[in-house]
Length: 123
Image (cartoon, rainbow, N blue to C red; front, side, top):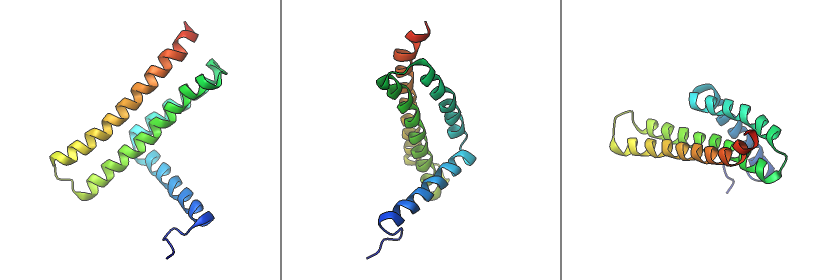
């Protein structure tokens, strides 16, 4: 049975278009995503200026990209909860709070990596 998005190269192309649509939606509709994207656009060039060591670059840049990933997942959770109901429910709050906590922990990862690698280079 043929899957709705096809298979092989067709599936990859359609998945890429869905990803593009998700990024565009997040940029247009999610203020947190825009703020975090701006953070990435500021810190990635700074990381490239601070070091040329591959491991250090990975530890400075990858957590920033991870933040965008986690923010998209958090927004997807919120959208799914809102699709079910706007009515206040403890489980809806729990799901949204856990998504927010995931973003928070990702920011902690960024902070630790930048403090450990970038701070000594600028002091």
